[in-house]
Image (cartoon, rainbow, N blue to C red):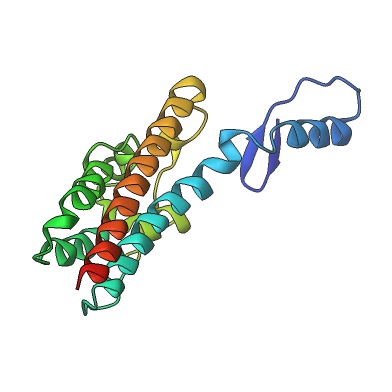
Length: 173
């Protein structure tokens, strides 16, 4: 058993050279879900946050700068623009029907803490977060990523329709 970056590895030697075997193992695992899950999930939630901020900016809505997705969505819901209803529903779907929400529950956190949970090993109070539910899930993990991909596509479609309606209404006036 070998320890690298606080992770234990047990590798069956194929070359007889432990260092070479470790290099081969790490190269083979470079794109596995163990190495890309956290960055992809972080980017997903960060993208949701930035989409919300862009819409609020476009609508000239003032808000206290933060990373809290629910606060941003609440601000968006406060707008009296009915054309936003499908966009808001797409955001709510991401927040409630997301396969990675289990990760937040395991850490006794909500979606608002995504920024710290997925970026840092501990929260602002010094409590360590667990990442076990996000790694090495193979087929189930792949299905989870397919789910967020479809959520992204739905959100994108709703945002495009909303933006088109905004442009059309500007041309009518």
